[in-house]
Length: 82
Figure 1 (cartoon, rainbow, N blue to C red):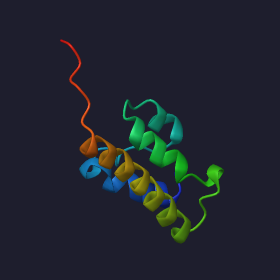
Figure 2 (tube, rainbow, N blue to C red; figure 1 turned 45 degrees about the vertical axis):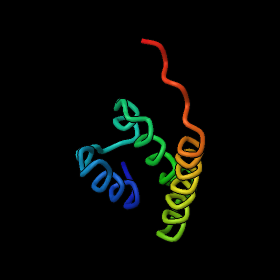
Figure 3 (cartoon, rainbow, N blue to C red; figure 1 turned 60 degrees about the vertical axis):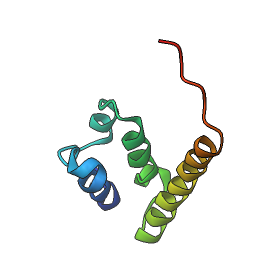
């Protein structure tokens, strides 16, 4: 069973593409690792028990992703050979 923060995430992520999920087991069977990461981070098992904590975790993830994006923009990687 998902908590309210996970339900909100499932409804919002990728335009609601995963709104149908009902459990972490089902989430883990989906091949979207970012969605899986978010759903685990927002789980009660990981001590996400209120909205402030849920927001803090999503903001931390957003900051981490922004750092990665900034690194790619600052120094592009060469293309892989085909």
